[in-house]
Image (cartoon, rainbow, N blue to C red; front, side, top):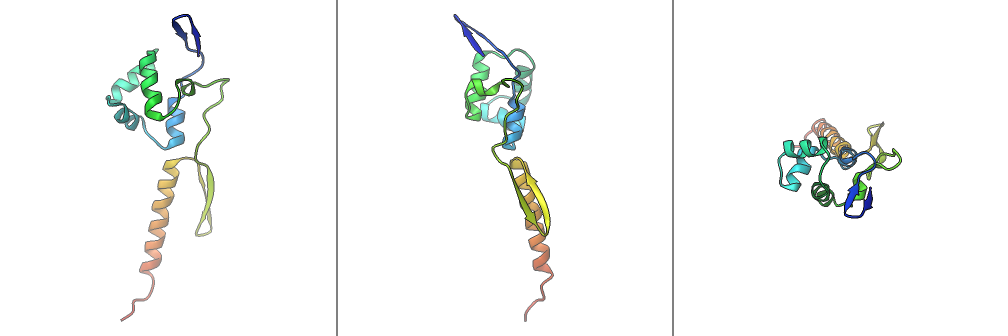
Length: 121
């Protein structure tokens, strides 16, 4: 993105979806944070969004407007990344959704293990 007099020239592809994916968020959640409908957000991103719209998106995501764009074709890096072993199986974590799925899997395994223990009387 370059500033030229009073106009802004946008260079690069908007990477809102990459940022959302990295944070485990969905478009409708971003729209809620912005106080608009998901349809309005989708329409804005499909067109050439105004700077005020880009600023609202950036503010809702806690990033700068510049961070909304892919520079040099490189996608945004995940803010969560790791590997966890659960019951001998290795699980890869790349975003918040992976953490939620893993948590549900661990809770289920824990409950199944607890139910298989003999009861005391």
